[in-house]
Image 1 (cartoon, one colour):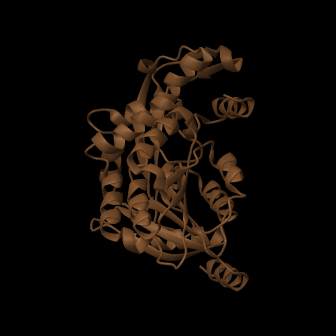
Image 2 (tube, rainbow, N blue to C red; image 1 turned 180 degrees about the vertical axis):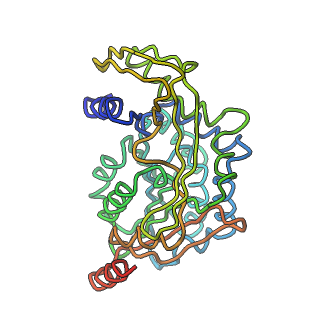
Image 3 (cartoon, rainbow, N blue to C red; image 1 turned 90 degrees about the vertical axis):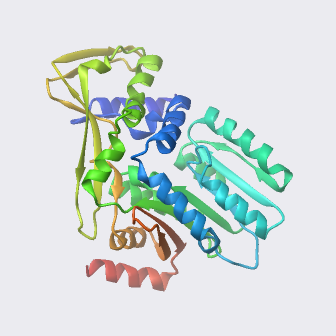
Length: 336
């Protein structure tokens, strides 16, 4: 792990309240755990809802145009949902350039090997092992029309970070590019809490992976049995915000730990939380109006949306605004 990443870890563990950044969960084990959560957690509705939308709407989600696209997948993971795009795009064009971007290099290369074996020479794969910022920088000089995918990851960022990441993605886009991202539109508190605190403890194991990694890589000895895993849901329907979920560990007693790899001592009072994400929450839940405001702030025009029958998930397609649209959207957003 580079010095910048270590500094971000130290910042989180010395903040008030303390937190571990969400991205720290995603080493090879964490990526595998998340994949297991989305498949095996029967209460986790989002993946099933996303798949339902893709099965019924993929032909509409990918624009019909007289030219070929390249495909960029930000936070590609196991590419389980990406395969719907690969299959449909290879029906339309003879060859496809594919750029999967993932922070876990080892997990990324395993996925790339599987994808290569499945699709053969018609798919030209350039893997990018990087976070979003570095990945986008590496792709900045790849010319031509693109479909850029961002599945779900937006929901784990703070509002300002969501705007900033969307602005960064838009910097890759020309008028012939499209961004497709998915969000959670569930407002049912019971369904949300059941999804992230399942009886089998799959989500708990994933969220606690940051502590497991910290103990392994930075030589700390933080005992998970000295904390209680807690979740809650904060509802917010205002146009310029969103609802969100929180996950944290709550100290059962007064605790003190050394983290030699970070040259850090940390202390917890009894009842003090350690949030398992940066920002006020993660796994944000949106209304369509909130999504429209969010994309407009990033200079993107929300052109189409698709939802599943149970209205758990939404796929959104955006283009970059031209200057006139940007002024109009800003005026409309300011008047809300």
